[in-house]
Image (cartoon, rainbow, N blue to C red; front, top):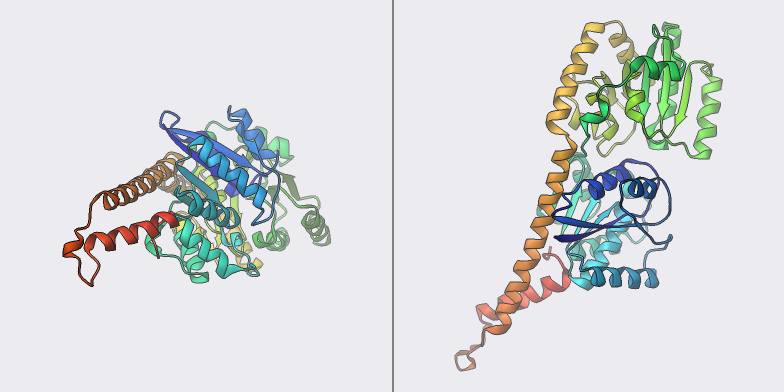
Length: 415
C-alpha cells in the first residue's frame, strides 16, 4: 500500500476543497493510504470525519514558517509518505520546498485563475521553487494551463489536465416538487439558478441585473443563488437586489451540502463569471439535465458545446445573458433537448470515477520516476571508473551520475 499526503490551506466549502475531499475519500483504499492535513476545523474537516477519516489540523501559517516546515518534514519521514498532493498555488509552493528537501514527488493541482493573484509577491521565487520541487502540475482545464504557464516558466511536459468529476448517482431520484416547495417557488414559475460560493469573480451582480431585465419581460421568473457568501459581499448583493426591486423573487440560500437537490428544482442554470478554471457547477447542472447559459469565461467553453449541450454568451453583458435565458424559456422542446444532450456528455466525459483513476495513474507515474532516478544513482555509484582509461572528457557514466544527482536533489526533472 502506498502512502499519500493531501495538502491544502483552506477548509471551507468550495471547488478545490470538493476535489480534495473526493480524492481523500475516493482513492482505492486497498492501494492508497491517505493522510490529510487541514489548516482548521471547518466544513472539510467535518466531511472527512463523517467519511471515517480523521484529518490532522495544523493551524494557519505564513510561507516560510520554519516550525511548520519542521512538522511537515517530520510527518513525511515518519509516515513514509511516497507522494505529496497539494491543492492551490500557495500550498504547491510549500509542498515544492518539502519535495526538494525530502526527494518525495509532489503533484500540485491549480484549480482556477484566482489561485494566482495578479499582485502575487515574490512570484519569480515561487515559480522557481515549484519548478525545482514539483514533479507534476495539474490543471482542471486546458485554458487554465495556458494562462498559468503564461504567468511563469514551468515545463509543459511536466503538466497534465484532469477535469473535475461529478458522481451522477447524487443527481438521481430527487423530488423536484418538494425542493420547489422548500424554496417557496410555485410550480408554474420559471426558476433560474446559479451555484457557487459568492466571490467577486462570479459576477452575481450581473446575475441580478439580468434578473431585473427578465422580470420586466415576464412576472413568472424566480431566481435562486446557492453558495457561501462572505459578509461584505453578502451585504452588497442584498442591497443591489433590493435596489433592483427583486427582494420578493431572488433568494440566496447560503451554502448547501445538498446542492444537487436544489438543482432539481431549477428550470435553467446560468454561469455569469468573468473567469472560471473549470466550473464544476456547470457539470453538476448538466448531470441534472438542466439547460445551461454560461459566459465564455474559460472553463465553460471547454465543457459546453454551444447550441448542443448549452448556450455560451460573452462575459460582462447582463442583457446578453437575459436574452439567452428568455429565448430558452420560450422554447421548452429546445430546453429539454439541451438538457438531455448535456447529461449524456457530462457523464461520458466528467465522471468522478474517471477523475480519481486519472490521479491514481499520475501518482503511480511520479512514484515510478522517482524509483528510476534512485536506481540510476545507485548504479552510477556502484560502477567503478577505470582511471587508466580516463581522458580529459567525462565518461558517459560520470555525465549520467552527475545529472541524476542534481535531479534527485530537486525531487523532479530539471527544466
